[in-house]
Image (cartoon, rainbow, N blue to C red; front, side, top):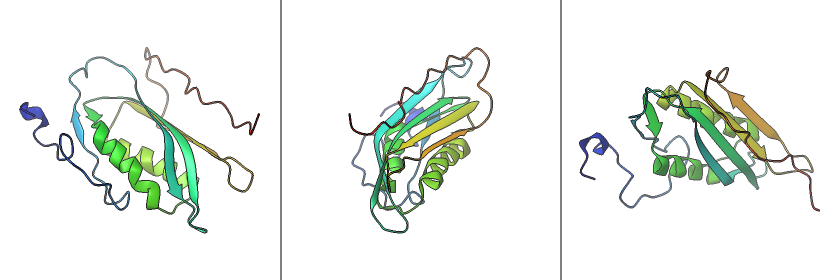
Length: 154
């Protein structure tokens, strides 16, 4: 990368290993060069995994993260590595979902952020977790997250 505004990035453009835990994961940000415009950014992670803290069995979720940036954008490779670091992390669905949101809010200070954690059933019951920082900024189109409720087979 030759642009000096990207010189502080440590993960993009090279080999990176999956962090051992979300606490060890490094989230990186880049300047939002379109900061004068209000717009929505969406990340979808349809294969998010973590571990049940009681049984150690895998839990699976479809995460949808929407945010309206202010001065910063999350660097997508660092986000992928951060989300991947949950694969060996034991925590309940609620904790994982809100932890992702809070790390992004702390890093980016966005105008607005929401996350939908659509968790697949364990023990016969899906648990969906939603977090939002406040009302949607006026004049910004925020599409529906598009994840249907769990219906089981068929």
